[in-house]
Length: 636
Image 1 (cartoon, rainbow, N blue to C red):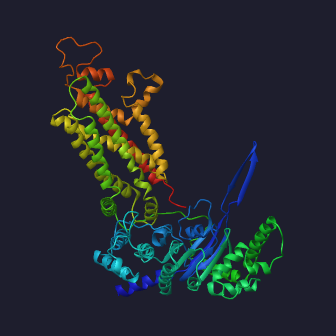
Image 2: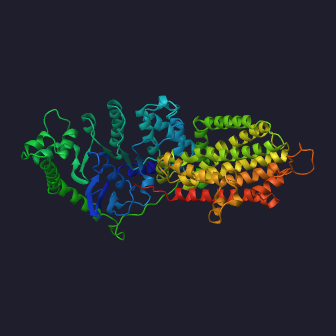
Image 3: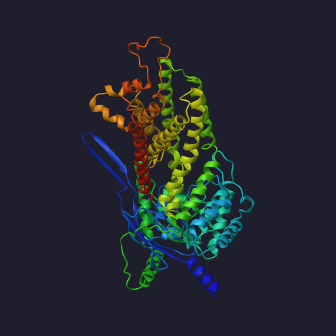
């Protein structure tokens, strides 16, 4: 009985009808001239749209910029609700607030982890999106079943691929993206331009796959630009858009008949999709035969605007439009009493099927594997660190305890501190590189923001900051010949590592809300340069004017260099070569005298306050990074 009930429930959720009546208004163009200059701004116009998307393959088609993707995002509850009015109904019931977590959405760009295999990506989706009531065995069976249904058996254990790792083909990547959404057996599957970047044969195979799923009772809604005929004939329903306006919505097979009835006849052997776009753009033979010949560029523009207005008017007065409105009315009347229809946009809610610890375990595991399998981030970082350690060790090799040794020690410690800051700039792409992946998985209900943030921080700090800092310390410390005590060495290593942590946290705070790595690098470079000036080498800190002296408290290198100086210089004597007991004028013989001259507090508290300051700065920067990630724009 439970099995039968489960099957009936599955069928119920598959055979759903999406009803929509949505409005959004913005001016198409706004031109304003004042104070001798003009401001031109273009806005998207989202006209009133009504219709039904029944079980089957439902296509949304239009020219570039017609609003296909925006319309798809509204139906999928992934559009910013601000400014929206109307309603989207699922089988006559109001769209639930967490609809985007219950439905499947395949974005235009690939958003799967390229360093993992197809099977590993499917397991990740199953582990986080399926409820706890589904056993691990059932999850594995579902993964294997999907692999076979999508025709991915041959490449199931192959990596998807990245820019540096050769992976599977484009069609197989697209099917992998589709499989990530099919894990939850969604009642509605949305796809944004699923044929983009695919050759004709691969695109055809992807649409055939979608058609088979649609024929089994699933509601599939996709946006597409200009499909070939072999793809067009697979569509069950067609929605045509032009500049945000709906000019046709109905069965795809009767679209040609509809346009013929309003005066636009498709030529023999012409692709219907090409024909529709030609009509919309006003450059088809049918348009030429049904319009008055006018000369001049302005008249061509007016002619196209006139065609657009005519298409909208013809559709709104058509029997198809009236039938759709009547059917929508019947769905509305079937809504359970006590839940009145609202014209305001619904709220957007994220729900999760797994707890915090389960999410953290899977996301952390995937993040570590991605770092280990990506040579660009793991091997390269360690190799560069080792190279720089050898360079600084060779330049300052075996420093002496004399006046030149004092200068060389100071220079070496300054270089080491600044190097840790600039080396940590590589963390700028930590969130930027996976921005699209994170946003898609978060709003789909894979994991919480805090889970993703902690996983990325821990994996980056351990693999790309801690290990390189330890390697750098072990090589550079002994090559330079710094203070030969175990306490001084481990304090040096701890300080260098803490500087790397703080610089990494600063980089994350700056780049968390950026979309381009180059822009983030510019901001971080400027910050590091200013910090370097107030580190204590390029300018004597006690001599800085009072209205600028506060900037030294924001300098990461200052705290790192101060701690390293106290650790290294205390207890050293740099005047052992002088026979006289009198200190030569202008020279600092002891390390304490040198530190006092530099304005460095070498007391116990003066030493550890540097580490405390670095710890506080790390916490503050990480808090800023988390808040930026938490409130990042997640809707289009």
